[in-house]
Image (tube, rainbow, N blue to C red; front, top):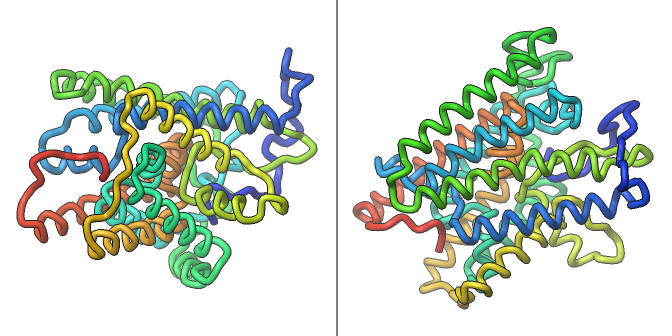
Length: 382
C-alpha cells in the first residue's frame, strides 16, 4: 500500500466536526486550501534552509554534525510531540492511518527503506528535496521527480506491483487485532495514551539537547528554525486532513505530508485532468513547488542546471527509480515515513526510517569509496 493513496473507510466514525465560523465552507475547499498552504510553507522553508535528511545522515557519519543534523534533531521529535498531543486531546484520530495497520510488512519496509536511502544518496537528495530544487530551475531535479513518480505509480498500480506484492507477502508479521502503535504494544490499551506522551516528550528533550549542543556549528540556528517549522507542519497536515477537510459523507483514510505516491498521482492528474481530482498530496506538491519558486525568485537564485555527462544522468535515473520503488515499499519517503509516519509512533515507520538511514549510510560509503575520499563540502542536493 502507498502512503499517499486514498482509501475508502471511516476517518472519524460517529464524530461530527465542529467548524465554528467555517461551517459555510466546503470540506474539500478547506482540504485543498490547507494542503496548498502546508506545501507552500514547506517549499519556502526547505528551499531557504536546504532541509535534507541525506545531508543530516552524511554530517553524522562524517562526524561533523551541523545545520541539517540540528534541523532533524528538532523536526522529528516536534512532529511526534505535536501529533501525539492532538491525538491525546481527541482533535485528530490516527487509528485508520496507513501507518497503524495491524500487519507489519517488515521485509518490504526494510528493502524499501534501504533502496530509498541508497537512491537519495546517489541522486544527492530525496524526492522532497528534488521538488524544491526543480522549482528553482534544476533540470536534473525534474528528471528525478518524473522518474520517481512514474516508478512509484508503476509500483502501486502497474507492472511493478507484482514484485511489490511478492515482497510484501514474503515477510509480514500479523499483530492480530492490535495496531502497530509502539505505545500500544508497550503499555497496552489502558496506558497507551500516557506512554505516547511520555515517549514524545522524552524525544523532544533529547532532540532539543542535541540541537543545543550544535548551536555553534555553521548554520545551526537556521537549521533549528527550519526544523521547528517543518516539525509543526506534520501535525498541521493531520489537522487539515482530519478536521478542516473532514467530510462525514465521504470519509477517507487520514494522511499527512508525504511525496512518493503523490508524485505518481500528480503525473496521472496532469495526464487525465478531466477524469480525476486533486487530493491532499497532489495539492501539497503544487504548494511545495510554488513556495520553493517564490523563495528562489525572491533571492534571485533561479538557475537552469543540467547533467554533465550521460553517466551523470544515468546515476540520477537509477537513484530516482530506487526511490520510487523503495518509497512505496517503505510506505513513504524521508518526509512520509520519516516524519508523518513516525509522528504516529508506528513500529513500521520506525523500521522504515532506520532502513532509509542505513541505506543512506551504505550509499555514502560506496560513493566515497568510488570517488576516492570525502567531499570537502556537504551539498544538500545537486
